[in-house]
Amino acid sequence: MADPRISVINERIKEIRNIITVSSGKGGVGKSLVASTLALTLTKKGYSVGLFDLDFTSPSTHVILGIEGVQPKENKGLVPPSVHGLKYMSIVYYSGEHASPLRGVDVSNALIELLAITKWGKLDFLVVDMPPGIGDATLDLLRLIKNIKFLIVTTSSLLAFETVRKLISLLKALKVPIIGIVENMKMNNTKSIQQKVQRLGVTFLGEIPFDIKIEESIGKTNKLLKTIFAEKIDEIASKI
Amino acid sequence: MHEWALAEAIITTASQIAEKEGLNEVTEVKIKVGELQQVEKDILEFALSNLKSGKLHKAKFQIETMNAKLKCRVCGNQWFFNKENLDEKTSEAIHFVPEIAHTYIQCPKCGSPDFEILEGRGIWLESVKGLK
Image (cartoon, helix red, strand yellow):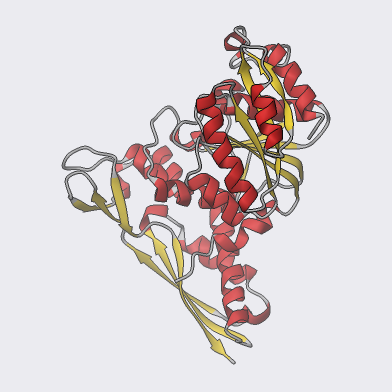
């Protein structure tokens, strides 16, 4: 018995020039905020961009971007709606306000389903917001998509970096390109994480200071793009 | 129209299998469709007949619908998915992403959303037959 969905995934993504997976070993480091702001920033720079929220059990990019009242259109598959100039896809179109209690096998199936039926068309960048850790979503993307690149988010905490170090080690062993590491929510002046990243032979993309005002910009993209956070993401985007 | 995306996937996979098995012409493709996905069989058949080409030009598609059997991981209860209990919006959500069933369906015995889809989830190619 063969699963036919796998065979069309490459067809669905063949017109996407860059797939950037925003990932981390730990939760709560700001992946979704980095992914959403990066997607907005690249759009603002004139690129055609998609944002795919793969954090199925805890999606949040729709909250960050204030997305509501839109749905994908059916046209021999699902065409993601264009919101704030970017094509946006999330399981939240179907789960709404409800919880999605999914085990690993369900996460894999939902991911394969959405990859097989979503018609992104031509994109310069597809930014993928990942769930935390090195779980099913990460393993499935590595298995199914050959040209992905990872942008890894950490905080200054050694607890976060310890998990990031493991993710870097795995990706390097698998020869998966790592665009670089972003140190988010920085509250000190040490270069400890930067030095550790550089010792691992990986690009340090930059640091983003802890921004107490960021919470006020959730759901308001105009305000979000005026934050120090967005300013730093803009600098990081120019290095990608 | 989502059926067209699934049909495209079936044609691509059947072509790959035909290539791998050295078939010059595919005569029959057996497909199993899980009830959970609520695929419109007529649309799927129409899409398949429109998309088939090359080695699949003369292929006949046999589509069998399988009941969706669910098993609660908490209390072990087994039951069959019943579309009639769902509103249109929920049915459509499960149609696009069958795993969304965990969002809207609970075990009728203990109320848990932690269930296993034993059979009848999506679309599978049962066999591809042809001439060498």
